[in-house]
Image (tube, rainbow, N blue to C red; front, side):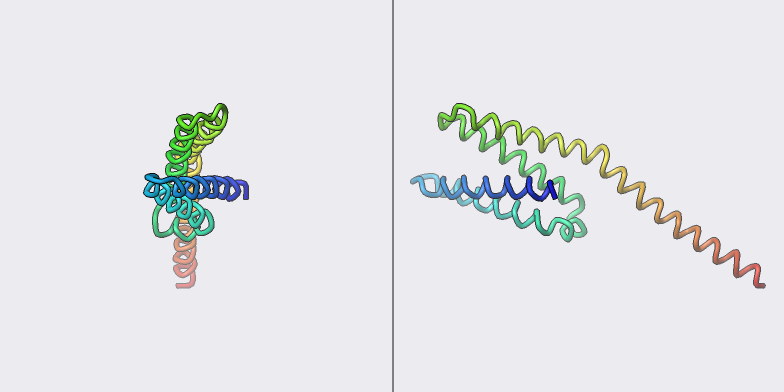
Length: 137
């Protein structure tokens, strides 16, 4: 649930910045790109479980996209003259980078162990059924 809230906050933030950029002359392309990225993040946060089956480790791609966009938004705020806002965007971007490493180190190996345990249990079931069939003979 907290992960969904984080993705929603990032997606809405990127979407609002895109709307802000599209209003400035000469920044329409950047604004449209930010709006597109914001929509991708928002949609991906709701259907990431379905997309995990199609695109392996989809969550990692979203984390990477969010970290890059947040750091770029922080740079945009810094160049725009903001005194403190860019620090929060930089920090959030770095936290998503940390989430990528945590996911790679702990979550993916755990998923692999769970899949291996399921395969072993299925194989043991096959062995037990073969043994019981041999006993009947």
